Amino acid sequence: MPICWLISEADTHKPIRLPHHQTVVLGRGPETTIKDKKCSRQQVELKAECNKGYVKVKQFKEDPTGDHGGTKRPREPSSEDPESRREEPSVKAAKQTQKVSVSVSHGEATNTSESFGHWSQGLKTSMQDPKMQVYKDEKVVVIKDKYPKARYHWLVLPWQTISSLKALSEEHCDLVKHMQQVADQMVQQCPDASSLRFRTGYHAIPSMSHVHLHVISQDFDSPCLKNKKHWNSFTTDYFMESRDVIQMLETNGRVNVKEGTSELLKLPLRCHMCRKDIPTIPALKEHLKSHFPR
Image (cartoon, rainbow, N blue to C red; front, side):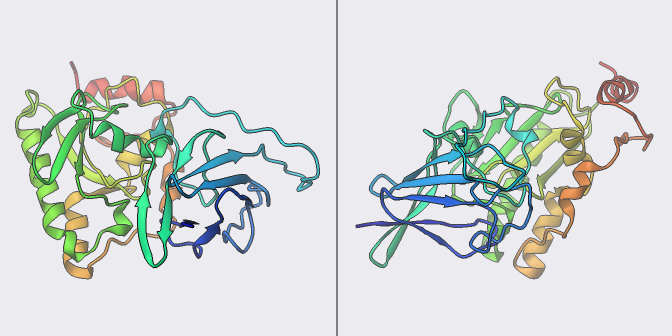
């Protein structure tokens, strides 16, 4: 019988065994190493389908009193786009019928089976969609960001499965350099390249699974730019320059994300061009028109 394991991509806890067709309830505690009291001790219910390589997940409504003796209702899913959902040190879960990725072990051999059903796996679906693709070669594919935060916003993704920046190592140097070269090509072929400035980089703590390089114009003229998190994820050190990532891999063989980086998303709004403080997103968008007229 295959065995399923719940594995932390950030390596914050040991693999948690999920027996086939048995319900496992997880939340705050030593097993997950979650200490945030906003997360209950019975936050999610997992039931593994080991033969099929996925886990059904039900997330319970938070109970701030800590009393879990009553009946719990599944939490309503948010309609907000994925980029506004940032990684937090808590158990992530989907609706009861959604599938999440698990590790399935047959004896000593281990294979990873992933589902595209959960929102965080959306990139893996988009990169296979010919309608989303704008360039591809044997190593990478470029797609249009589904929720662009500027007039031009592309994502460069490797065909090779790499979950996040933390999974990169020295052996990926050539691949990451190739991703940067392709990003440069995208900028060069842009019809507004002469009038717009571009940046290429990675979110330090991405919301979407599968490493991806952002190629984004600095006008930030888009209805999908809706809140402070969106803005700060591209205009603070939360956005790691591609060349800095390459240098880290060449020097240290890994990418270092500074502690407390997630706090950068909470910084006040500030224009990235003139550094002026702006009170609201609508005011910021109006201000940006002075820097990037149509």
